[in-house]
Length: 289
Image 1 (cartoon, rainbow, N blue to C red):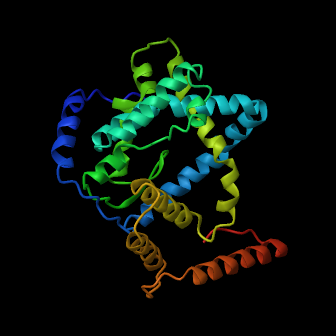
Image 2: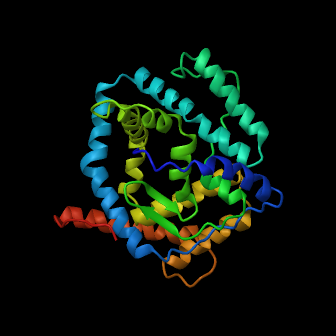
Image 3: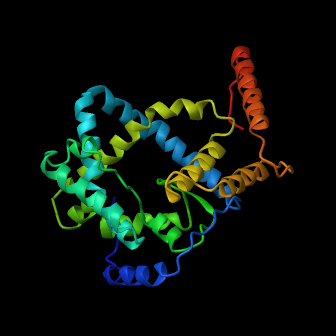
């Protein structure tokens, strides 16, 4: 990603803010509404078009010409080289044991794992504690804010979007490498480009879920929110928090019933799929609702 303006003062400000805020930190509850839905849907349509015509074809070509062991090695390398992001944020979150786990993984994989292309740390049962600055802000009690579909970057919130400038500039070794190398034709961006291609290639198997989704935008929005909640609560979000999120999704679909009904949602999904089959059999173009 392009280098961001230098914010040197943040190197000193963030640790001080962490110490002050962690003293009485309380995880902020999630927001369940979507007041920016009109903008978000347009942004999603733009991102989807870009993915359909550029990113996905490149990822498909990458998987066809790149041997599976090489893909695995590159995935291991990028997971490992990005660990300083998690290490720094685990420190800011007041989780020294998590930071030590990630530091152990980083050192072992850099050495025994041959620069991180292999992953002996996993075989040694050293857990991966990935996190980011959005989770750090949440643990400081910063409100989530509205859901935001960011052009080019994808789903986020007003709180989580800060991970891009903070993690991407302060903690990402690839960003540091890019800022400190001035090759003639921008070759220093190649690792970041490969990283994004590798990430998109890993998501190819999930494309079928979107194709069959009743509302792809809502599917991504709600799936992303649940994923973030799982990450925030270490895979075990409280039942009342999940219920609040599910009720919010139901409200956004103009359902006045405050009780989330999975059976009703499944029924809507099946009805939509049946409608698409009828349209396809009659030769009419189908479209997402």
